[in-house]
Length: 568
Image (cartoon, rainbow, N blue to C red; front, side):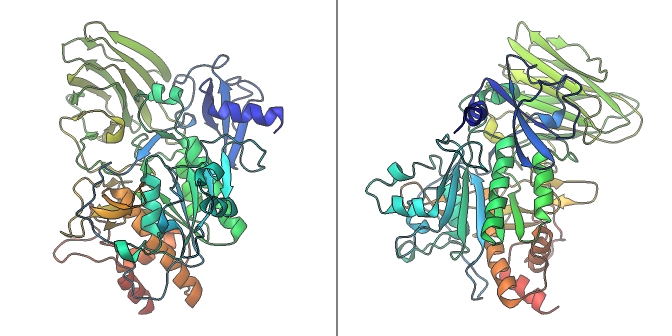
């Protein structure tokens, strides 16, 4: 590798550099907002990721950078509970002779245990075509990968025949989440353990995401030991998966088992724009977990009476390292706020003008607030106030929201996803109707809730919500409670969460793709097409109106979907 290539890779990994996302046509250079000729990578033509030296550039804040330019933080969409019993088995119930052959399933997650038997065929060969491990710095130059190390199918097969496979391919899934999802979607049948993935004939392309930088975790008030991923690495992962599909000439289903609460209801961040465009592309379908925030109390929708002009919002705060609270308001209304601690200390009402960043310290409570605001966020035009709590005192905090009224529209407040909180921090009067996570709100992808095979009911924790005035998510529900999954000990455990349901759906779409190709079905092989196909046949519950806010158009039912299309 050249010095320039090494310098770029070092910057991507180093906490001494800020990662920021810019439009290549933006005037940030002419404005002098950032240094000339920074180190950068281009995940797609619409966006460029710059790596800026922290010593010579302003720190992260909305007083200087635009909202979408700062990466968001994403967490896993399962409930992190595994056990060895009480499992349900899911498999292809379509009764058609398809296994997902000739279809790729791509994952951007915690990696994969490529030595697990469900990913190895009877001849000892892997079903994984490649692994891009972002956590292992490259030693040699790769023209398409500025960081991380790619391991090919040939290398994985060589490793499987070696006494110590990880000496050949040192990529490991130390968490297990990526292994679970890949196994559910495409794991080979294991008769002795009564296990099969939904599409055992599919092949896998895997990205192991690197963790978010410490400076980004600190910016959002997330504890250093939390497992966090960032927008920029997800964008690069999508680019890798897309390129793999194009290079191999095979259709791909991409499963996203991650989510974030950051961002307004209508705002599309750079990752979502990329997903939206890729989802429209022929040969690609994207599936996303809806989230597990339904009962977590992390969302609030407020509407201030114009005659009163203000509303008190109470937040119960537990023992936290820190957290970020966002308030989004639609124009033409103008919002401001004041904050009171459990001790009664008060930060006076903010005076909002344009954009800014300030800090406030509560002496008695020993809590510091970092407050950033934009009167008009660049992409949506909506107002954003972002409050980062550092070392917050336990107890009930009161945020008084003020409105300079022009109409009766709502405002929207959001706490982090539960996986980024240590305790039961929540709104005292939450609004679960907006609990879905991003990117599940992207309209043209398949967003999936979890339901319990035993009871037939939607998993209580599964998220849902409005993505605009008329449309809600999820699109449908799939099995996601106590599901048998491969674990990191070459055995099986059970797992629960909307990411489990998303993996089940991804495998189903792989079966659908093979069926479309084999029988020349005139149906659009992209995300909108597959979503329409699955929702047409979704199984509905008598007496319940559909689409339903918790279950979308019903439960995933491949056999019914096939019948609906054949009878058109």
